[in-house]
Amino acid sequence: MNSERRGLGFYVLTAFFVLFVLFLYGPMTTIFILSFQGPNGGLTFPMNGVSLRWFENLLFEQQAVGDFGGAFARSLILGVMTMLTTVVVSLLAGLAFRRRFLGSGPLFYLTIASLIVPSILISLGIGLAFQVVGLEPAWYTSGFGAHLTWTLPFGLLIMFAVFNRFNPAYEEAARDLGATPWQTFAHVVLPIILPSLIGVGLFGFTLSYDEFARTLMTAGTFNTLPLEIYGMTTNVTTPVLYALGTVTTVFSMAVILVSLAAIAVLRKRRARRIAG
Image (cartoon, rainbow, N blue to C red; front, side, top):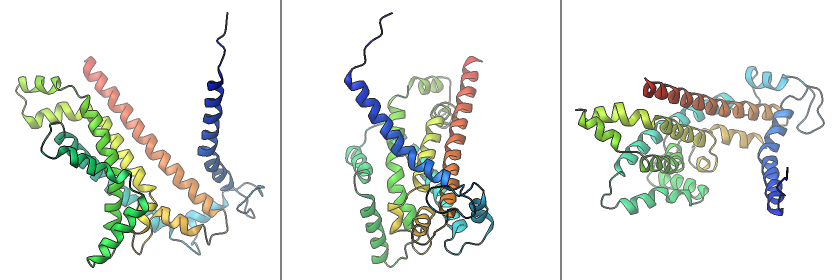
């Protein structure tokens, strides 16, 4: 059997992919390993034993610097707020843009323009705007708005793509059977687009939970978790910082896995209904 010879492009792309994987997962793996340093271990290799000492220190002991619990709670609440708002607004905008209306083109480009503006400039602009009008920047006001400038464009683009390939024949069939507009949406449209809405929510939460640049000038007095971690890099000299990074990474991955499991369950239920 003759085997097809690989060209030079194949090996170049393979090398590029290997480097990409190393740059993506190498630092994460290093932090994960160092978070299991022994009680006398430091911030660098070689490992000085293996233990859970720094996770115990993070979770059960008072830290000399940093407010881990408060920062995590603020990031979690802010992420949920951003997620819910992104899902609702993206869904409504997707429904609205199914038909062209006056100014729809400029409105679309204005909405996604924040994706090409440097994040730090948006953060600085929002922080300055709050100060000019006499309002104190805070993570739940100015920070919330700054995060929406990052998550909403992604949510809108996803919903636009979903509705562009949505078959209106399903809605026409429901109306022919006497369904009201609300019944058509609740029992026909929503079940079909629900996996996509979960994806939008996942985007909204994870982008907000991990956001640093747009939070820097808008968080106010209290830090979110990314800001807290950044501040700790200058004054924490133990692997507890790596333990925090490992815990937050595992939490982010758990959110993604739960969302994927929910999508899989919804697809199975939909397939059963169609088969039934």
